[in-house]
Structure formats: structure tokens, C-alpha cells
Length: 148
Image (cartoon, rainbow, N blue to C red; front, side, top):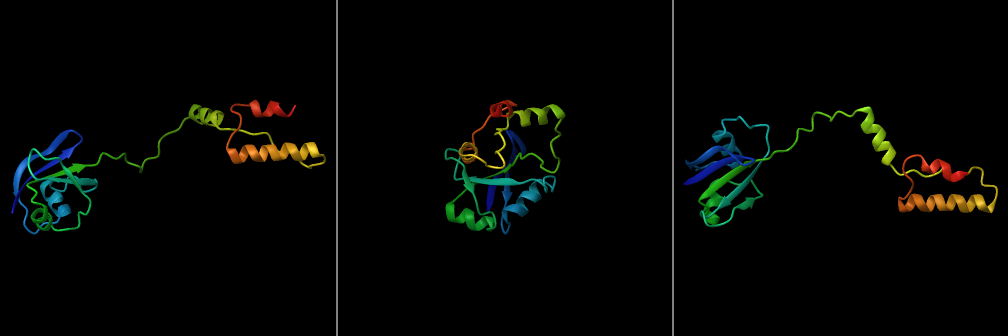
């Protein structure tokens, strides 16, 4: 059985459309064979279609034999699309200004009054708890001037 197979990374064709014999291959082993293991560490998606006029169909289960999928749905074209995911092994660098800005934008609330001596203190603390539950507050240093 033969299929027209392409490999894309973004909009660029890594492997141009080729007619390839796909008997007894799994999707992953065929991908590594036609890319010559150059993209072994990359994730990829699989798409198939019946002809040039039909739309591409995403194949979720890539553990099946290609021949079973092709015979069942009469696909003639196969496309591997390399996922362009960011490498998460390197942590992004953060500078002091980013940290200051991030802290300035976080919502702040005044501290609760301890000990709670009067009913005003109890009401004040209940309002602070209500604000915490609603996830509201002040930005910058405005929460510090509210107690005066």
C-alpha cells in the first residue's frame, strides 16, 4: 500500500510530498524513518485525507498500524505536522523590574486587627475576610493608607 506523505514544521515542508510504501508501519516508526531521526525529540500530529479536495482529518490514536487506518477510511495522503512547542527545560529569565511590577500589580489587603477588642474590630476583620473571599483588593501601596 502506498501513500503520499509529507512532513511540515510550521508552514515549511520538511519532507516534500513523496509516494511511500507504508506496509506494516506504525505512524511513529514511519515518521522517524522519513525524517531520518532528525526530529526524534519533537512531538508531532498526524493528519490524513482522502484526496486533494477533502479536508485534513486529525488522527488521535497513533498506535494503530497505518494500513488498518488507511484501509478503513480510504485515505490517500498522510501529513505529519511537527509541534512547535517552546522548550520548557530552560526557565525564563526574570529581572528585578519584572518582579517589582508583578508585586505592584498583585492585589493587597490591610492586615486584620489583633486582638479583636471592639465590635468595630470584628466588623473590620469580617470585611477583610469578605474581600479575600471575593479576591478583591488594592494595588500598589494603597492598602497601607486605608487603616489610618
